[in-house]
Image (cartoon, rainbow, N blue to C red; front, side, top):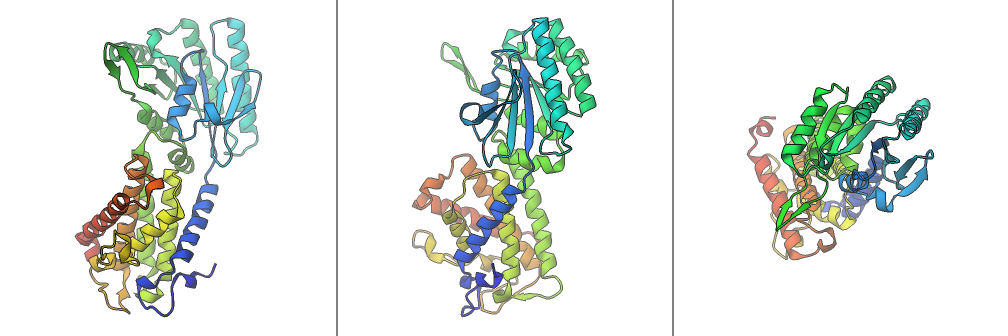
Length: 399
């Protein structure tokens, strides 16, 4: 696509942006960014009834154990995945204490890991193994401890980190006791993480709220390479903090890129197509990190509000151009964008977009009600606040 189509040549200001072209370009970049994600593979192991399916369905944004495609890998191992979703979960049959069953399942697990690694492609390898133990059982058998030791030893050779997940951890005292005991056994695991994947009804009007999924995501993240942490951020829903942190790194990098793009020669506003293209890529990468179904109408509304191209979008109220809030650019046609202005605009846009993605993630903005006055007001307020905050940032004033 010719990037010059971003602007209407008869209008020498940001209000001359061709939003249709800018939004299309942003969506093309979202597809490219999403398609470039590395494929993440996680294996689950544990006894029957430990809640592996519940864990999967509450940890990731796709309910793989209910709606995902089922691919038998071996007699006792099943792979769950969905098209255009960069995650496969390998789930083993319930690990019971029968010695013959232990031997067979263990052999299939290690052979699956070996086979996946044999291709030499990161997208095929098993990247992390979650060994699930029911915390409610309040005990772990000696045979199981020995099996974990063997598993971690073999997984170390195969370079697969092992995390023990204490599922159904509704009793804090028993969970801590079990966790301390497991740590004392020197099993060679990367972490022991208590988790309650769903609210647990104790009866008599008492309920334990779910917890620990965000901690589990953090521990998984520690085991992954940098390129796979972007995939983890995309596929998981348990940790908003991970999504925000990864998105903030994108904003920081893009802000520097935007400043560098105009550092040598300041750009007239009407020639700032390069800046808009850089910002479009930033929005696409942030959208990929959050893994949300963002519509073209939302991107259009965001761009029009952030760049001051459509003052009538906010309930009929005249919207002062967001650019007026950035020192140095002014409001006159033909104003110049220098490195500091480019960085300030880009940073404000990126931080506002992260806030809005977080609000959608937390159901504070409903995408299917985008055109409601309440949602439009929220979007405007977030963008307006972000630009005003950037306006007071001494770092950018001095660029």
